Length: 105
Image (cartoon, rainbow, N blue to C red):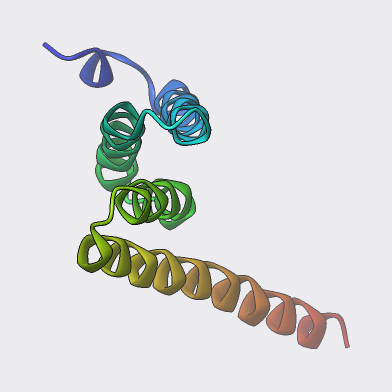
């Protein structure tokens, strides 16, 4: 079994964030294969948890890694996924803030 299947949800969230941090680090030191590998690991957990919040950074780091290796088509796909996830998350937060404000009135 993979470690991801044995951990409670809260720890999976942290593990996904750890993988994203490693991806970011590997992007910075130009080890793009490792950056992609860890971003994909973080993204798999995010998908399993159905967490839009956790999908944002892996998409961003994958876009960076592909762009840095000259794979513009793949970079553009992940950049679009990043923007869509980011917009979706913050659009939902804005809607909730509006609802909360209306309830207080």
